[in-house]
Length: 429
Image (cartoon, rainbow, N blue to C red; front, top):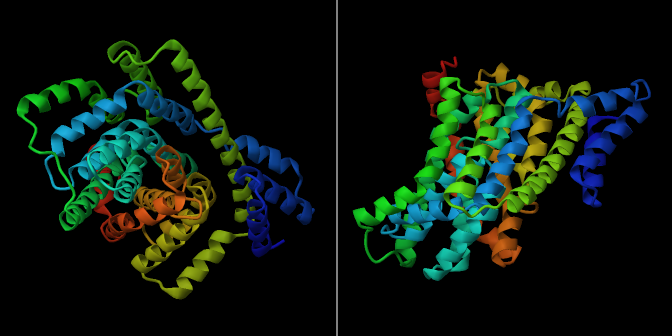
């Protein structure tokens, strides 16, 4: 059973509606049975070994933290603060959307949390301000994927666990790329707003208004500082920072903003546990599938194929980015990352790219996949919360892919965009 048959089996199972996690498990099982020389106990060993990772403990906590912030009043105050900062600029609500996503990304670490919680607030506010639905949902989708780039980041935890790379280094390495993504989106919003004569707030917020908004939002704004500061000073690990984020979100929502109750916390805990459990099943299935890819020497075969096209490191990386983008259009990012990290890591080291540098490239590229049909995870969420048809959402987001892809290409050619802060703050070589 060669690699072509393996991939054909996987795609067939997915196409007939079997969940991705179980498609990966069944494909792995079929491979072992067809081979006949590998004990089936290998499958159970891989199933157990995949989720058995200390860094992966952070995933359910970050999911829980995102839900707490959406429910506990934190999201609304972030949005209001962003409005006082940039509400006077042409295309004001588009800029507010981006700034709010940047701030929220420092707490949730997931694009789905941004799109599902903050996204609804952003779209409704833009509608009231007179923006059309296409622009509103397009910029909301584009800004939502900043969440997994600026720390904390669930995909960075996954990458660090699978690649054996410093999660703290990935967290800090995502700061400058995330800011660049926000800036590039803001430039595009400004251009579109001038061209289409979009409305803006009547006047710049007064110092008093900005100060009041800041005071209301400052407890929420402290969250990313606590997380990054704790990792930087060694007070806690990136994994432990997830539980710190949960504790802090509960304190804010329950005692400070008083929009959480014990019953709400319990329900959110159950919801996050279910989401995390589904994620761990995918990790288990993808780990088993990764064993097959390793046995079939896919990394070696792919490297030979790529080097047959070009031996230029930049050219090879651009080919890999193109491949990741295509995969991201029809496969859920976390699943694709778990499968592909063991395949690409040897190639990356061979051409001299730092694994943290590649990690950020991979995360951004796979997150862009959340904005592209046919799967488009963020597109589906925004369609559901806004009531806008999926087809309209998908069409609206297309123009906002341009600045995001531009940032990816810039990172490919300028590694220090990613590596400067990890080297400065953590001494990573």
